Image 1 (cartoon, rainbow, N blue to C red):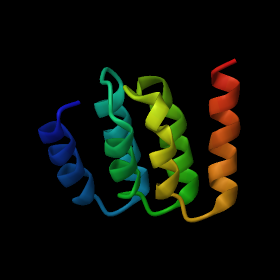
Image 2: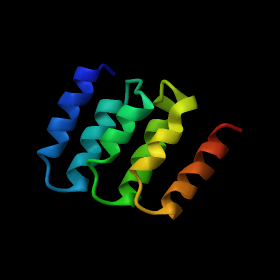
Image 3: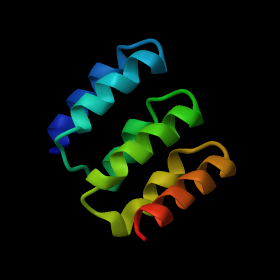
Image 4: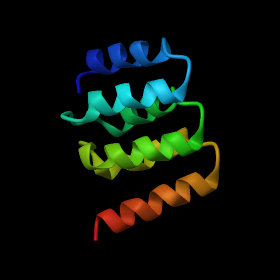
Length: 95
C-alpha cells in the first residue's frame, strides 16, 4: 500500500464515528494489499478500543510486508494484555 493510499484510508476512516464502521472499511482496504508495519500502526491508532485494534492487527498480520518490523505495531495498544494476545497470535501463525 502506497503512502498516499494509507493517507487516503486514514482520512476515510477518521470520518467515521465508531469502530464498528471503521473496521469494515479497514478490512476491505487491506484484503488485497500489503502494508508496512508502521502504516498498520497508524491505522490501528484510528480505532478507539484495544479489542478492535487486536482484531485488525490479527487480520492484517499475514499482509505485513516487513514482518521483521512488526514490533512497531505493538506501540498502538494501550494495554499490555492486548500486546501479549497479539504476540501469541503471531507466534502461533509462524509455526
